[in-house]
Amino acid sequence: MLAAAITGAGSQPTSSPAPHQEWGLVNVACASLRAEPRHGAELETQATLGTPVLLDTICSGEWRIATLPDGYRAWMHTSAYRTLTDDESESWRKGKRVIVTHPYGETVCSDTLSSPLESAVTDATLGAIFCGTITPGSRFCEVKLPDGRTGYLPTASVDDFASWSERPMNVDGIIRTARSMNGVTYLWGGTTPKALDCSGFTQVCYRNSGTLLPRNASSQANICEPVSSDTPADWATGDLLFFGPDPDTTRITHVGIYIGSGRYIHCSGMVMTSSINQADSLYLPRRVLAVRRINRNYNRLSNHPWYF
Image (cartoon, rainbow, N blue to C red; front, side, top):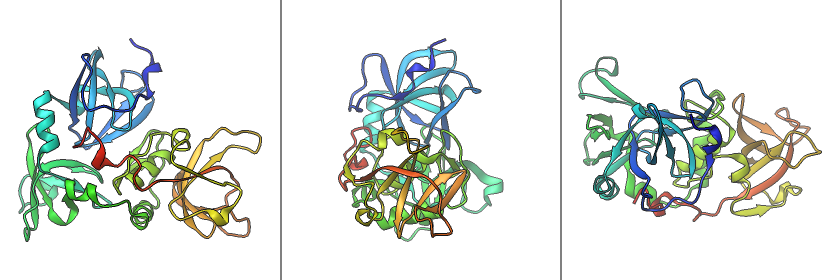
């Protein structure tokens, strides 16, 4: 069995697989990637349906090392993906696709008449990508999963993926996504609106605006424009605030999104709003170690070679 040391951030993703790798697409609503090749191992991260992955030929039983578009690597079970040839991968990148943009997700149904209880094909969380075309005026959009299964999603819950990815980063939209997850429970390694950790929360919020952040808080703290952590007046809505466990360390252990007036939204136990101001009823005694402002052109999905 290979050690868990392979997990974590890898090199910058490229457009072509190495000789020891092949393409794949996540084929389940939420794939769990683990520190070791077993279901009981620590959850490292997750990937939503339709996420492109690079799969190493290195395997352990029914587990393979997968690299995600953010560069993170961990073990994924073979039931969670479908492998693609290079031609199939290119066809997927050039084909018509839709992305789920409804904050609470949807259910893909086998027909448009029965209820989801009777005709469910799969769950579809925020950010899930399917092959499909939106027909103007139609209440439903026919979609296709990586393994060939088909079904229907309400047109109101999806958007054309190419058009969606070309829209500029929208800070107001990022905050709306964040607030839509109020009360969602904390899960170490979680990166979907069903359950997430602090950096998974910020990643989901920014990804829903077409920007792909690194996976971990410490990695997110090293990107884009630094802003003085000692001058809250300089902070802007949408800035990432990074925290440490105590005043005597510079180790970053937590991240949230600034929403103005000294308040930030984050996932700690659950998604909630807290404040840096002691006079605020939402005050939480945490030290801000760093602040980062995400550049509007940073790591856009529209420029990512795995998607287009």
